[in-house]
Image (tube, rainbow over all chains, first blue to last red):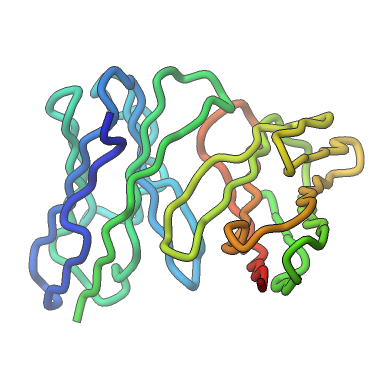
Length: 115
Length: 109
């Protein structure tokens, strides 16, 4: 398997623009996680899905952020409108079951810069 | 919320040396994990260790839950061990872990 795939790897946009980040989890994995990493706040879980259903979105910072998982092989994280403080590295991860402590496999991340 | 403190913040070692990284947390936890982020940004799980001791090759981890700390041991360090090591904890058996600020390890050849 190719592992978790994220696109784009880098994104530079201007404040106010819509940004869509994409993730393809490992085939057969039922859980998908979106994380954000910034210098100020470190690593944070934004939202996670089980079988395409959002389970916990308490980490989503505000209404400008939305995440969807229309099928088992694809998820998006959208920011609209984007702001400079959204600049961060966004990671997607997947795991095969919801057993706590089971290995999460991380994608390479999308480095977002909002000017 | 729960506080996580990692020490030291930075560590520089010569290849072959051993090291101990520490994670202190402010409340009881049911989920504690160690992660490694390599210099290219890739994150990997190392250990799930809410209590007890585990070993995986040159790496081992011990969590003393009653005293609210965990230790990550790296023996015979290699340059490929370089990167940032994060400890993450969660009070309940869930996924919304609180990450520490990390220990940045540099192993010199």
